[in-house]
Image (cartoon, rainbow, N blue to C red; front, side, top):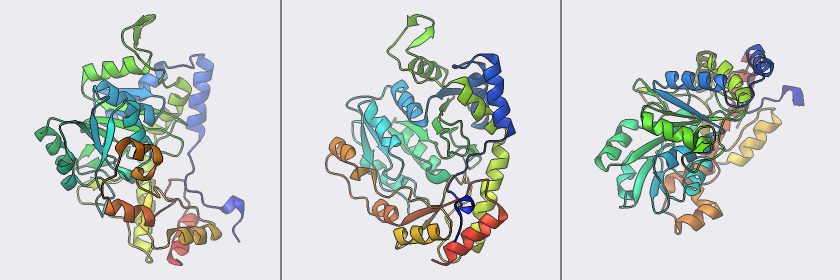
Length: 360
């Protein structure tokens, strides 16, 4: 029987010398609130996404919230998005007073299905908010073409997709990008978010919104929020950004090992021209809950991201009324199970995971 010490958890944040030294340097500086380290983190994210601006926020959720507000999205507007994602995607839309409109997902990638988007567009539609779920990019060419044809804003929820790309363009670099640096993400700062953009005026609006509407001290230009990211968290994120290539290579190697050696279930799809961030390695199982228990007994963690369509949450149902028919989402959400793929897995861990999954 595996011991608690040998249990392979779903996530294991990397906290090494680089992160500790970075935090200590901020503590020694005495500048703990948003300051020069946050600015360096913003520059690093922008560079990684090939964007001109990075705007740090307190979380991925507040990044989405600020991005929607800065684009002028509010009451009476509709935002087309996916029902197969974390609740924050839809909550951010509701926070600004808009209404989420849900479109079913692709069978292969679990991302929003571009072929179904146009049918959901109405005179109230203001934006499309695709989610690069688990780290596999959406079909951005198709989504951007639809947005251009209908004069719609595109906001990428790239919270799980730092390091991913589509046809050579990094996620977050196609339009407005929103990222999370929560403790379990591929790049983490404990808590934190980031907005990326090439639009200077939009970036300035985001900076105002995250900081009480204030550009100069005691001069409040608009109604804003306290959505800043402090330099302590930013120091961890900046140290992690220096290791992004290494983290990504390890996640990819782990995923490729699983795909080559797991025979009991089909491997996740990676389409040609896409670079997967491998935030999660997801498989489909007819009896997902029983499988999770079997893996647990073998000392292997797992999680069902996400066990039901967002339309099934009471506050979402109240906001949208009768939900649309979402057969792919309903089936995938009842079968999906994610196994550990994080960069801290050892060779022994990988072998144990393969053995446990192949026993299902």
